Length: 327
Image 1: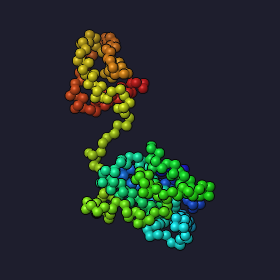
Image 2: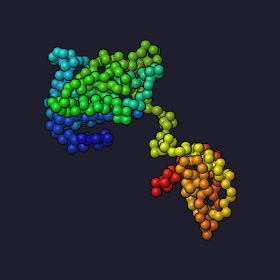
Image 3: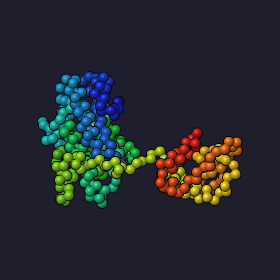
Image 4: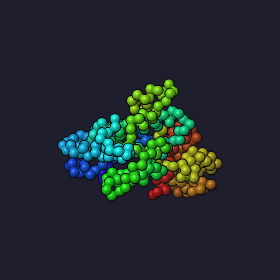
């Protein structure tokens, strides 16, 4: 198994290691993963990687790879229609890459409950409409899943193993989930149709009428930098006894009530604060001050205005506390 995230250098890696020859490509599949946390990159991701794969497969010069893909889709279509099928439905495999492709929309648990939000529901269907249309055109499957919430993980694993080893795994994993929860969509390759996709993101409301023919980037736009919220993943407020604001509010209040120090402190501010603040944040004890023989400048008292006007200083101060605990 290879995991590649650098599209710029993927061509050389495909040729030298991943898919060096037609036999390897015939026994392999490609999983294209898009991040629903950044849906504006979804179509750019799948189209870009498909072009890289297509160029490499073409360079191998084995047309039987494309023949195998078409034969499989005809077999699946016949199984669902309970009859022998001689040609694929309109829109299916218009672009034959010659490689089995599975498209995965990850982090589907981030899709909130949008039953009462018409616009959000329409946007979700719009994303699904474009992903499924692309998958239909290249003969790929489309699965929305979340490893965090366990959505469709087992189903996708079973389907992936079936595509790799169809003789060893049952075909019952061709289960289709398309009308259920939008976070749980699973469309196996060869099952989807244009009429099913065309029913998505359709509304009589004038505001959404143009979405049917709109380009993906016209509706799913990347937020401006000032609209993106910065995330501090290293610090979880629920994992500490007090938030930074509460901590410094209490600390400043206690500081104003402490008597003036008789001796100069040689400990840095982070260590003094750490000694003054106990693990349960329920009481404060005076910091241990060591005697210094060398005069030191008077320490600057931190005010509430400093906390509000310079949050980056506060964050750095708090991070120093955490680092001292680790050391």
